[in-house]
Every structure is written in C-alpha cells, then in structure tokens.
Image (cartoon, rainbow, N blue to C red; front, side, top):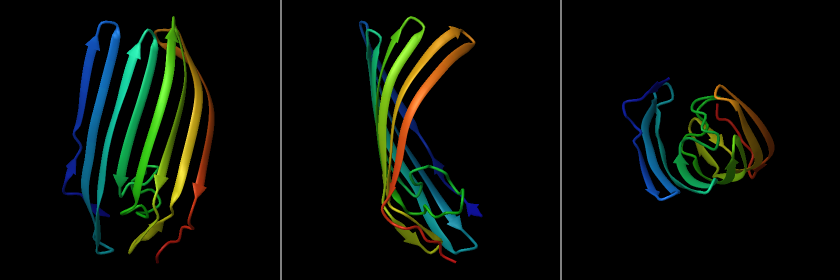
Length: 165
C-alpha cells in the first residue's frame, strides 16, 4: 500500500537538577513521505512536539504541545484508510500530581483540534476532542500497582465526514 522511503524521528531531552527541584524538557519531530501507488497520490506525515515537567516536594506539573499534519487527532496511521492524509491537528495537555508515600494522586486535562480536509483518497472532519481525568495510584508491592481513574471525554464534530470512491 505505501512506499515509505524516509522516516525521521529524533527526540531530545534535557534534564536539570537544582537542589530538591527537578526540571525536564523535551522536544521531538517526525517526518515520513508516503506514496500510495494504487491511487497515484503522495503526502507526508509531519509532527513536532515540545513539553516540560517541573517537580518539587512531591508535586509535579507537566505540560506538552503537539502539532501534526497527515496523522489526525487519534494518531492511527492507516486504520480505516488514509482519510487523515494532509489533515492538520494541534493538541495540548496539562497534568498536576502529588506523591506521598506509595500513593500518587493527580488531575489532567487536554484538547485536540483537527481541521477538515479532503484529498483524492478521502476526507476527514474538523473536530475537537477534550478529556479530563482524576487518577490515583498505589504501589502495593514493587511488582503490583493499583490504579483508579475517573475520566470525562467529549468529541465535537464540526463537519460531516465523507469518503471518496
């Protein structure tokens, strides 16, 4: 189905420690050319991301941003066809958690916005995904961790999806 001559996916990380505080930052990007021989159509996967985390006294704050083209909100390459070819999506999330003893509790929230696109091989709708979560983890033993999550998720579709023949 595809001829993938180039895959580039470097990632960088920076870790700095100042006394009891920790700061971690990351960045990455993805590029891949895709050629659909049967459809005589080509496009590119492109993405970049950056984020960071700061920690102090058991409290951790994490934030990240990702911008993609040709991947879509779900990041599901090729499942259900190539309708996400050339679609633009941006995503972000934030998380705050606290660790005490063997227990971690936290909350996070994120959004993904996708622009509509139509190509010779299909179309993808515009839409917005939102998700918030409360969570708790308890490390019972080094091999067993109990996890509980309460999630609220929604998707708002702004256009109707159609398929090309």
